[in-house]
Image (cartoon, rainbow, N blue to C red; front, top):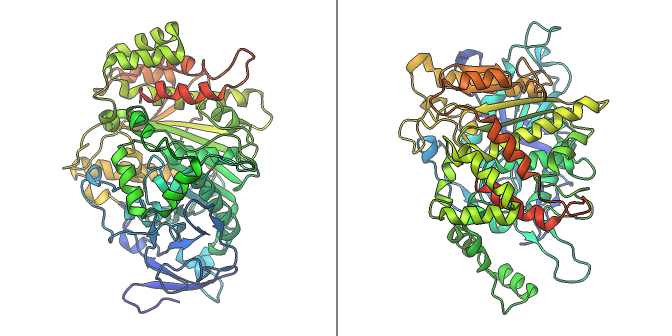
Length: 582
C-alpha cells in the first residue's frame, strides 16, 4: 500500500524479513517522458550483517530484519525510507561532480554501517496481492554495485550519486535486444552494499598461535553477497542471475568474488573497471611510522580498540594514502588461491559459475592520482623498476613509456587488457566459454566548474555517467550529447545484466574488439587495427598497443621463483612499479 506520509512510501511483506517500508520514488531519466517513468521502491540501507565490536568479523543477519540488541540505528523497525549510517571514513570531495550531490548529511557509525540499498519495480512489491498482470513473469535479474574508494572511503548505499533508482526505471523501459521479444527486456533489481573502509576495514595479522590473517572488509562483502542470494527473491529478484559490477577497488572486489571458496553468489556475470593506486608508493614512509616499535602486536591492537573512532579516521587522513591494501593471502574458507595481479585473470577464467565478463578502464586513469608521485624524483622511479624487474626489463619499460605520452595512460590499460586476453584465450580451449566484452572511456568530464572538467577519460568518470543521477548538470549543447551518452551507457549495462550482448562484438584475442565512448563519435565498437587507425585523429593521444604489450609482459615476469612457483614476496613487491604507471 502507498502511504500518505510526507515521504511517499510503499509497505510490503518480505517472506523472510517481514514487513518492510520502502521509499517510493519516480526517477527522472533523460529521454523518458515523466508520465512513462515507472515508480521504483527504494529500500534504503537495509542491514545485511552486524558488527559485534571493532576488529571483529561481521555476522550475517539471519533472524529477521534487525536484532535490536545489536543493530539499533535510530530508525523505526522495518522503516527503510531514509538512509542509515555510513562507515566512519576520511571526507570525500564532490568537486569532480561539479558540486555536492542532492542528499542529506551523512551519519557515521562503525557498528551499524553494513547495509544494502535496493531499487526494484514497485509493482512487484504490492502487499497481499499478486503483481499487476503486465508485471507477471519470472524473477528479475539482479545487478549489484560494489563501490570503489581505494578501500578507505565510499558510501554506495547512502550516496545519492550512486542511487540505482534511475537505472531500475530505465530498465523498465529498455528495448529488448532478444530476437524472441519485441516489447521490453527483462527488468533488473539494482542495489549496492556497503563494507568497512579505512581503519575499520583493517587486515588482521596473526600474533598468536592458531590465529589466522584475514580482511574484515572482504568478509563484509562476502556476507553482503550471501544476504543477497538468500533474500533478493523477496523483492522480485532472481538469485540465480546476479551480475556484480564495480569501479576501481570495487571492480577488484567484484572480480575477486569469483575466486572465493564456496561461491557466495552464483553470479551470472561480472563487470569491472580498473583504477590506479599510485599513492601507495608515496605513502610508504608514513605507513612504516604507524606502529610503535616498542609495542608488540597485541598491545597495539588493544590501543586501537580503545581509541575513539574519529582518531582512527584522522590518522588515516594524515597518512595521505591513495589506497589501502587488503589481505589477499591464504586463508581457510576464503580464497582457494591468493588473488593477485598475476593470478586474477586465470582464476576468473576457470570460475565455472561466471558466464560473462565485462572489463573496462578510462583513458587517463592516473590523472587524478598525479599528486601522489609528483614530488618523487625520476631517479627514485628508475631505481624502483630496476630493483623489482631487473635491469633489462626496467629498460624496456622506460623505453615503452618515454615517447609521446604521460605515465597516466599506461599501467591500467596493460593490466585490463591482460585480463581480457587471458579470458579470451581460455575460451579457445575450454568447453564452457565465457563471453568477454571490453570497453574504454575516452569521454570527458562534462560538468562546468568541476576540477576535472573537459579532461578525457579520467579515473572514475564511468561512475559519473552510469548512475544517471547527474545528467541534469550536463551541458545542453549538441542536443544534450553527454546526457544521451549517460543513458546509452546505462542501457548497455542493463543489457549485460539481462544476459544479452551489450554491443555488437565480443572481445577475442585475434581481433581485440573494444567499445570506445568518446566526445567525438559517441560509442563505437572497433577491432584493434581500427582502434589504432581511428585514434590517430584523437586529440587526447593515439593508442599505444606496442607499449602496453611490453608492460604486460614485464609485469607478469616477476612473482615466480626458480621452480616456477608463485613467490608471495615478489608478487607483493611487483605492483609498486605497476602502480607508478597508473
